[in-house]
Length: 184
Image 1 (cartoon, rainbow, N blue to C red):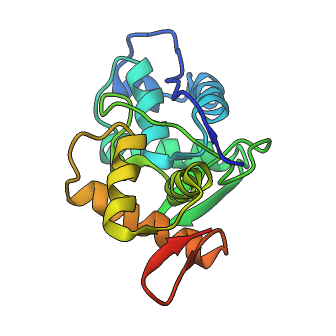
Image 2 (image 1 turned 180 degrees about the vertical axis):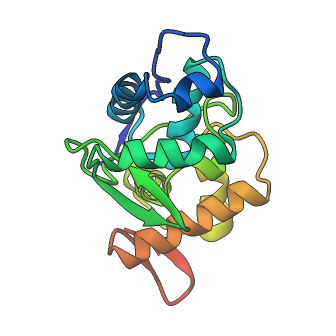
């Protein structure tokens, strides 16, 4: 059974630092501690969102070409479980079983393009499990958007839905019948 959970943004103490402060390597351990904490609370999480959460905790807005190599270098020392999805790493806590839950969120917390495909697939399975019926793609997309708290089904939400559908089919979580209905 797929579980619907609340999306929790990691509470991190704000520290006011400059990019040069971070590049001095005096805060490397603090950056790594924050990366681990964000991953533990918000994982599975895409790399750019994880970096954004940590960066914002230092009162900075943009990662930029100077800080990005530092962040990539530091996260690689942590050996966090990850997989590649659309050319971006998705990090997850070692105690998370992928596709066993999903977390609706408002756009202020995370945008549709920041939701891992495995989590999108979990939404689809959740809908099918709780309806005990099959769906045509259009109706399933409506329920998908509703479950993730999206009022509109723009191109990014449709893309997430399609990616979740492909992921779920490829991992034998769901099937598409001969009459183009989606079922468990």
